[in-house]
Image 1 (cartoon, rainbow, N blue to C red):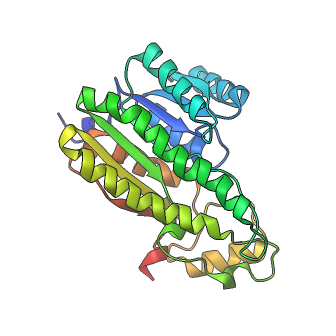
Image 2: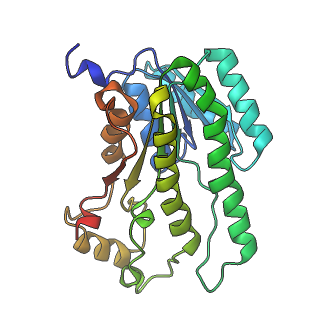
Length: 260
């Protein structure tokens, strides 16, 4: 097998939560489909996932849309059963779903944190637990959790000056915990054929306020924000046999942000 063959995902089944989303999710899904995987995207909007899958199929890829509410344990069970019944296996699980909670330290409430915890903590645990036993039986599986630079370092408040953008504190808490949870899975299930890794992207360009974009680009060594294409290679690497001896890492895709 050549080194390029190791990046192929032909014959693999991959699930991306929030995989039809406008930010990281759709880029991750496209990358896995382009690498040859049978792709499943799942989030709250079944219609969005079906439309996204149809677009990928029109481009020649094997894609399917399903529904998932990450904070609903019954929804996670239903998704698991549907995937195993239809495809018989799951080889790659990418967790990019996030419970959306706004606000700042001054405005967030304990209820906001409880809402986040139900999806971002309990939901993450539950969906990993739902599929990990299938992976154990296969003696193969790759779990990829999408964290953030803000799971490694704190927000830089100066970036937000001159904007109305907020810095929700729960986000740092969730993303930092995700990294160590990933290490736990990697250590606990490594000898059973399962690898678990994190990707921590930097700031994604989403037409943010001009002062923020300018300040961010000035600070980051590569000089620009993350684009759709930047995360694709990292996802395929960790999903494929190209990384078969890689587990428990947090791969920074941040333009050098945390190197400073």
